[in-house]
Image (cartoon, rainbow, N blue to C red; front, side):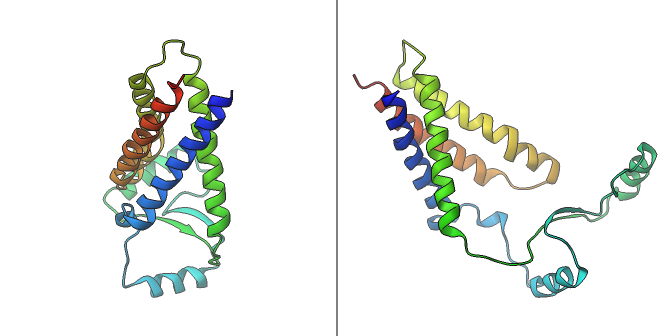
Length: 180
């Protein structure tokens, strides 16, 4: 268990450091948050609309729609514009809390991975590296990539993160977990 706990701490820190580099220093995700010169006009319209905080797909059917209404909606929407909005009424700088939560989640994720690996009596460096990459790719394929299919977003930055961060974790844990 000690090996899994220390591996979780080491792996979690590696994940956290890569995420900092990816989002802040290297700005890999910059293409997913582009600027529009119309932002003030759009924000004013959202504020004046009385919209509640949340995520919206526009246009969309009201809850309780029938199958016929959904079919008519889909037919009517073909070729028309649509938008996804994630709306918050107030900006608040919670960077410290967010970073703390991210570090805890990263440590927990790396610990769970270590726990799985330590059940293998014939553990090798390559098994850990390959397994780490597979876990990362599973998480990429089932969330960011699937969302990119449905919502036509760019998931390449997420793929880069997946390969780099889980590859680095695989290298570090491959070394750590195979120490005698």
